[in-house]
Amino acid sequence: MLIILLFVFLIVIFLLIVMFRYKSTAFMRQKRLLEQEKIIHAQENQINEKENQLLQEQLESKNRELGSKALEMLRYNETISSIIAKLDSLNNSLDNHPDAENSIKDIIRDLENHTKQNIWNEFEKIFKNIHSDFYNKLLEICPGLTASEIKTAALLKLNLTTKEIAAIAFKSEGGIKTTRYRLRKKLGLTNDDKLVPFLMQI
Image: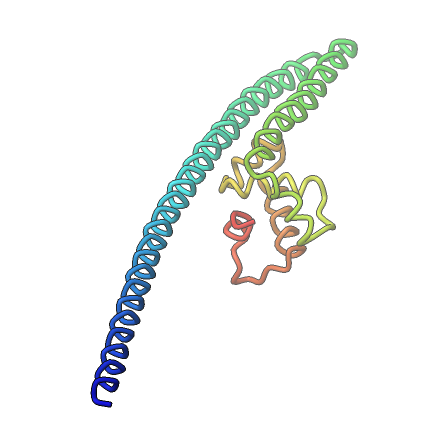
């Protein structure tokens, strides 16, 4: 009887040792898996950070390109405005020459129309490439915006001043201020809400 009990005791001890080793092996395996998962997770985070950094750098580069294009528009429009002013002055000095006056007025009108349309189309193409969802999101917030208000909103998103926007859009500073006021009202902004930061977040 004693031998049988001893034998059973030894079997139990053996089984306990086997179970302990099995659990120990399983625990070590799980620990290694967790460590590998942590390494993989850390690597994924590094990759995501690098991708985000690259995207941010690309966005900043494109925004600089867009800012350069806006400044180019500004300089170009200032040059055209200077030419138009000189033509107006010349036109005023041509008394009793209706044909010449009409020709100069036609030149001025063509210059203004050509400059406004072509320059804006080029700017808008770059703008849409960088901020592809801006117009859609803006119109989702406020579908009733006019073309002039949308253009002004796009230029405000670049943090341009009222004077710069006026020169680019061939409008007076007062006209741009009025458009800004209408934008604020239509977008439902309060006195405490700032228009430019709001547009920059869209």
